[in-house]
Length: 328
View 1 (spheres, rainbow, N blue to C red):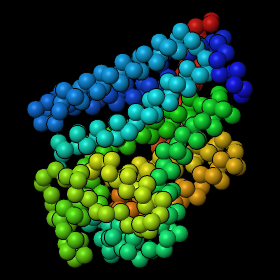
View 2 (cartoon, one colour):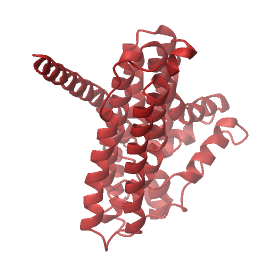
View 3 (cartoon, rainbow, N blue to C red):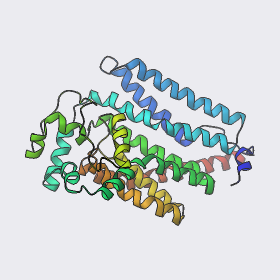
View 4 (cartoon, one colour):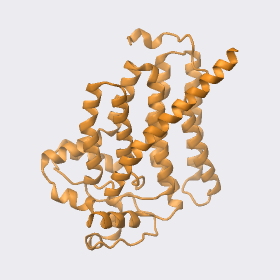
């Protein structure tokens, strides 16, 4: 693709919303109904409602811009802005899952049964080498850049599959967000301080009835003078106690890796692989996730890739049939 191709008016512009935009609006409606039904129980319900209205307006506004100038650049703009808003949607899950009992004690108990200890506690204590610490923490910080790089590669080199690629990524994200909405697990860095480290060491995991504070969290492990450590410290300062089970970091990274493999680009795949491996371990190393979170994230990431790929293929097949019938 050349630069001039970005602004060339398409002969057959897409008339309706993109598949990923339908996913976003569907999730917005589902969660809006939850907010309205539990209006008096959620914090800042009006803000949550207007947040969804604004995103719907942004989505429709971007569609209008594309219709006025239907080209690759405006389509990329539609996708890019929706993906930049994924962080907002992630934080929003912490406003919904407070409606349900916290389940950290169950997931921490699973880790204890499977491993005989808490990987999120022991991993960082046993492996303190600066090189390993930097690799894992930089890998974790590369999470969003990896997603963006894979999507941009498809846009630039495999444009016909660009929309499908972004649909699979976005649909996988919002699948995880539904998990986070209904399965409140804050993660070790919030749960451990809340119950006391003496209980963690003894393998005692009491139920927490109150909402976990996002300010009371464990200090990030690793080489304190490293770039990776500083990045993780900044990321932790912005995160909310939500979205630990399963690990979307692992799941979405696996989805990105499978898309990289699908692209048949050895360079892209070889670039993603080491960071993918690093993220799988880093989520536990920096205590954002329990060991079981990473395992379920790995399995679910594979499942979501194939499921949403199948949905995309089925949708394209049905759309093709409808177009054929219309021509007849």
